[in-house]
Length: 219
Picture 1 (cartoon, rainbow, N blue to C red):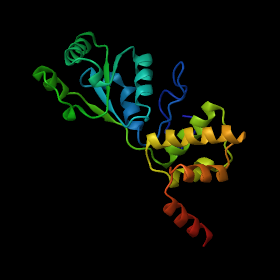
Picture 2 (cartoon, rainbow, N blue to C red):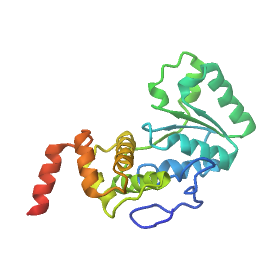
Picture 3 (spheres, rainbow, N blue to C red):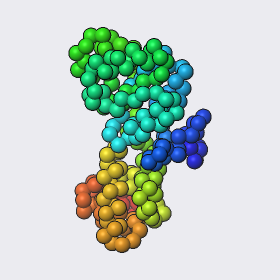
Picture 4 (cartoon, rainbow, N blue to C red):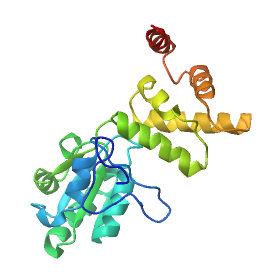
């Protein structure tokens, strides 16, 4: 990625450009293993894999990048197609060698699979997981989302948000949307003061936690 060291993990081939109509894929410790696996299809024990992760984690973007790089098929949402279609797609991937990636909310062990033949095949499929965002990934994702919107952030805003927010991708997107709306209303960039006022007024940060942190900062 753009930065190396403890913030970003360098990959053999860069997915930071994203795809057409997509922003960059931010890679950190929570998703690096999944990205590496998707970049090395030749090592797959079977020609199918399942990618799981929270909504908003970039899993669909990873699927689109995977399809672009490998020419493979992506089923985005195992419950969006009939079981028979997944069964035939699994078989076709093994015969043709064209990889299949299934994006899902949960691993196959948690699916309610009726077809016995599909269930047995899914037990052999590697499951890739995207975890909750770490500090660095959350900070980089916040900065990237604002850059995509063309919104100016004052220095330190993303670093101010991260330790005070619920650690989830959904919350990151909610915070960015709230601050974007606030900046449009105020007609300017996003300062730490505006961030504090907006996130408190909309209940997006815990006021008790914020108070404790501010007390500790003053000591």
